[in-house]
Every structure is written in C-alpha cells, then in structure tokens.
Image: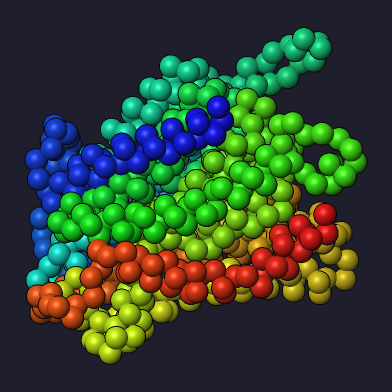
Length: 566
C-alpha cells in the first residue's frame, strides 16, 4: 500500500502540474485569468511603491531591480531578528533576539529561498518574526525565482529585442496569482486536519506520566503551506514536518509531498505553453523524471531493506530501517519525501536524513549536487537551462555545425557564462567542505574547541559535505548530527547561500538577454531538434558528466565509505 500510495502522489502531482503550467504561462504573458480580481490589489502595491509595472526593461535593468529589492529584504529581516526582545506584540513566549551571526545566516537563508535553519523555530523566532519576516520572505523569495524564470521565457521567445519584460510585474503576479491562491488551498487542508493556527503562546499540560511540559503552538498552517509550495522548507517547529502539528496524518503528508514538486514541475509545462513547444517540455520533463526515479527507487530499496548491521545481529526488520522516521509514515513515504525535497530546493523533512542508511544519504546529496531534476520554483528550470546550453554546444561541435538554441546561435559568450555557472556549484560545495575539514583538523583539540562534529569518521565528513551541498543548492535540509549554530558555519554557509542563489540567476538572465537581441534563424534540415529523444539522451549525459562525476570522489570519502564499513 505504501508503494501504491507513493505512486499515486507522484501521478496526481504531474496531472495537477499540467493545467497549472498552462495557467502560469498565461500569468507570464499578462493574459486574462480567473484570478484577475487580484488586479486592484496589484495596482495598489505598484501605486504605493511608485513602480510602473509595464515599463520595458533590458536584462541589466531587471537584474538590478532583482538584486536591489532582495538587499532591502535582507536589511529588513536582519532588523527584525536582532530586535526580537523588544517586539511589542506577537511574542507571547518572550523569545529573545538572535545572536548576530545566527541572524545573518537566517536572513541570508530566507532571502535566498534556502531556509537553512541554525535555530529551532518555536524557540528561536517570535510570532512577529515568523509571520512578518520569515513567511513574508517565503513568498517573495519564491516569487523572485518565478519572476526570474518569466524573464528567461521572455528572452527565449523574443525576436531581436532588448526588452525582457518587467521584473516587478512578474514578482507581484507570482505572489498574488500563483503562490497566494495555492497557499490558501493547502492551508485550509492543513487546518481541517488539525494543524494549529493561533496567536496564543505555549500551553502547559500534564502528561499521563504526571510530568508538566510546555507545548509550543502558533500560526503554523500559514507557514507550512508556503514553505512547501514555494520550495522554501523552513518549518515553524525545529523538527519540521516530522512534528505532528506541522504534518498530522497521511492526508497532510500526501498534500505536502505533492506541494513540494507541484510548481517546479508546472514550470516545465509552462515553458511548452509559453513558447508553443510542448514536445520540448515533454523531453525536459522526461529527463527530470528519469533522474528523479534513479534517485528515488534505490533510496526506497535501501530504507525498506533495513540496516545491515542490525540484520547481522540476527534481528529482523519487517518494516525496514525505522531509525529517525515517524511510525505513521514508514520507510517508503519517508524515502519519497527525502528525495522529493532534495531534488527540489525545498529542504523540509518528514524524517531525519542523518539517520538514513549510508547510500540513501548519498542519493539525497546527489539530488542537490545535480540540482537540475525539478529544482526550485523558477530556478529549477533555470538550472536545467544551463545544462541545455552546454548540451546544445557540445552537440553542435559533434556534428560540425554552429550550435543553435530555439533559433538563436550559441556563441562563445553564452557558453563561457554557462560553464562558469555550472562549475560554481561544485566549487562552493567541495571548496566549503575542504575548508571545514581543514578547520577541524588543524585545531589542537577540535572536539573541545569547535564542538560541531560529533562523528569524526566517514559520517562526520558526510555531515559537513551535506551542509555545504544543501547551502549551495538553496535547499536548507541538513544532517542534524552537525552542530551548525557556530560562527564558522553561520558565516561560511551564509556566503555559500548568497553565491549559490544569485550567480545561477544572473548568468542565465544574461544569456537570455544576449539571445534576445540576436537575429532569429528559422529551423532547417541541419538544425538540432531539441524536442527529440536524442537531445534528451544528450542532455541527461551532460548532467551526469558535468554534474555527477565532479562529486563522486567526495561521495566516496563520505557515504560510500561508510556503507562499505557496515
């Protein structure tokens, strides 16, 4: 039943993504939709901000707008987190202000759509911070990714023009026409299944054993809905969606699992409708799904097979490996969530990834390292676009023709940008892990001084590798055996999150701007067919060669070596 349940979740998600993709295409084009009643609100926002949403902007102006407003949001959340002690309302539990490096990491994390949490939600952030800073950023950071994709689509559809549309127009519409309506629907589902939504403080109760405990609650449903749909992943509670208040039962688990992948998949179909190239969308979808299943299936097999060391002790494991998993979900649904949340930039959890078997941890990391199978809202397809440019260039060289992408010649500038963006990802992950390993080793007594690595063996290396992988991929999940709330981790991962978020957006938008200005070349008999199975195979090969091979040595040092020892 768990296998059938998982298959239904995946199938229903894809079926829902098709009409959503068509709708998103209309939103990007500014066409009429059934949610046009949001237009007065949008006009009010633009009037107050003094922005002309219909002003034509080239790629430089759009990127300047994107980066400027993200800087404003960063300053806002830093101010909120550093002043929690003095919040005049919505702080019934008297949550204190964050330490500066922790506030920096949290602000960067939520601005970049990563939601890497080096704090426990219910004890680290007041209701004021949760709603007016963190939830707000979960909307607008996801909206930023969607707006960036809209600019990319515009650039691909253009015929010799500098105009890429207006970032602010797409940002506001992404929030009002896509994220907000979907979040309301999911929040209602959560509310009907007993997820809390209250401004009351913690409740003191007496357990059956006679112990007095304080049970945290708050405006949970609102945050959980957008954390899933916006591929944010930041939970209201420290345990995230393993907590019964965030994820009470099988219905909410299915809804939240589907929400993780819904918008990223819909964006692929949106491409087909926007450019009127549905076959190309099917090819990209097939490549993404093949990669997703290649990670999901072995993870399920690993988790249902149980821990081999426990088996060697003569103990049967009829339910598979249950360490770190919720009994109400089991190994199959936990594995499904873990791969779904790591192939996207979601990062939420319904089980503890640190407790998964060794190879499952490797598959989780690989999903983030490849960073192209579904991905985040908007930026997922943007990452795939980089691999597509490289695949088109290599294919052109193989047949001795000038490579063309959707009627535009791919030249040296575009390829250089694509290669630099593609290589940045492994540089941040492997460089950061090397720095952490070196910092640990050169300390005279690392266990006493740094206090952030309790597993100095292969698994400890995996914990450090996972942390930088998650940060660079804007994912936010972690191997929670790592003591990450230190100045080293707060600052280092903060820098990685910033570079891992904005350079992969800047590069593709630059390429779209350059392609937008080029003369359109009609397809001929010698043009590489992008909507063919052959290109799909080539694209998949490029992802594996450029992506996977760079990370294999690091994976061998961590999870693979751990697997071989057990």
